[in-house]
Image 1 (cartoon, rainbow, N blue to C red):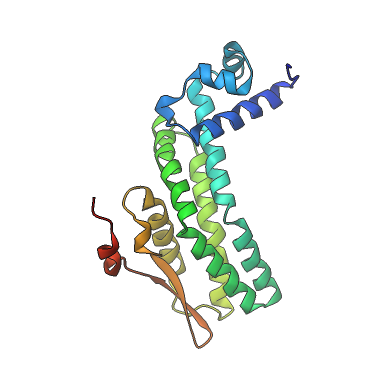
Image 2 (cartoon, rainbow, N blue to C red):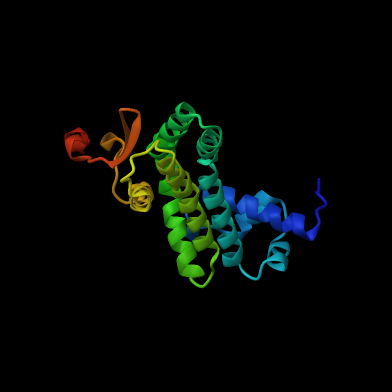
Amino acid sequence: MKVERSAAETKAHLVRVMAEMLREVDVADVRVNELSKRAEVSVPTIYYHFRSLDDLIILAISQLLERFIAQFDPALGTMNRALDEGDVAAFREGLDVYLALSWSRELNNEVHRLAPQIIVYRRLRPELLEMRRLQSSFIESISSVLHRAVECGWLAADTRVNSFVVHHLSMVFSQALFYHPSFGALSAVEWRDGIGHLVLTTAADSLEALPVQ
């Protein structure tokens, strides 16, 4: 049965369907006929709402990145509430969850799917600022929390927050290039005398655990 949608609803629907397709296939393997079938709209309808398939792919990749970033929202919410309420135990819990998620197998799988698509985005539309906005917002979301924690004395006073965040997130996204789950977490927080110390760990001791094919 044909679904009646407004122009805005049709565009949003197509972006959602394309985003789901990109979770299953590479950008190079996207076919407009398959999109038409999945979205239950005609091919002319697709090109009526988008000048090209690339325009639709760009919006879908942005949506996928937004979903990826949103996975960290619960942990960030816990930490922000803890800072507002002066609850150091809740802050520690939120930070532990944030770091555990960063190195989870589930996120590792997400990064493997998303990282190549970010490269495609930059190649197709290097002039667009949306990707930079999302990345900047992602960095700021955790950086601001950690700066507040330093001010509260919950993290060590000599913590170089910005350096840690950039290194941490760079390593998280580099999982798509050179990482194996047996390495374990490559960043962590160590709690000593009630004060948190953010550290970058090493995978050197885990190399022997790599499977040999």
